[in-house]
Image (cartoon, rainbow, N blue to C red; front, side):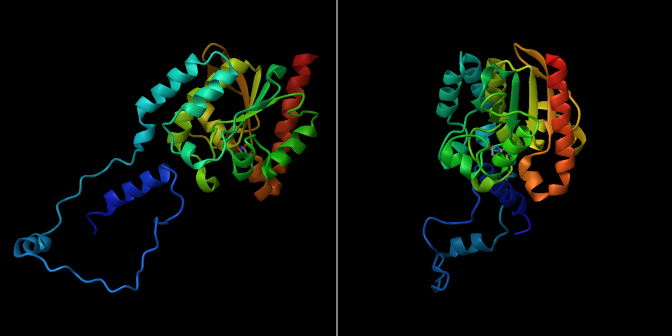
Length: 270
Ligand code: URA
């Protein structure tokens, strides 16, 4: 049993990467039913008594997100001449099991020509149902926060997510999932050509800025994100509204980020 642990752990990690979020079988197991050990032939009995062969260590890497899938995502994204084609390319991209468990593709929405683009993490249950980004409780808080500095998705910004599909059970996207969908997100940025990005939450900040620093260290100042065909775009990481709903005391920092954004926009237009 001890020897099998690494292989079992790798298999479990793979299942999680593929989107399994509940330990269910297709049909219920009757655990009360008496189990009879089938009689073993002498040779089978001898083999059964021998120690199990050493399991081959499975690398805990999801096959669906291995580099060829990322290369395919890059090629599909690069070939999309506009947002409609990009959305169709994402819809047809079958390398992620997230597509099978989600209900709707959640693409971006808002004002493409506004110069400001917000990038979140991934759709939740409400977004998955509606096929629109940030429409649930955290989206409503985000709308109120941005409205407090005079910004809305109807007039002032475009909003999207790193992942276009909901991870089952609203779990945090894995690094492999982020890497797989980043080519599509980067192409979305290249097509929209914003002057500034706001990275909403740690997953978006880490996905686009990279490095090891968490959101609490990254937030509150402008960074730069390199986008093919556009160059370096100023990017402001900020706290995710879902986090603010759990930790209202952190709204102070989020408010400071919004004021910095407002000041920057005013200076640029003044
Ligand atoms: N959280 C996100 O990061 N994006 C959404 O669209 C909804 C919740």
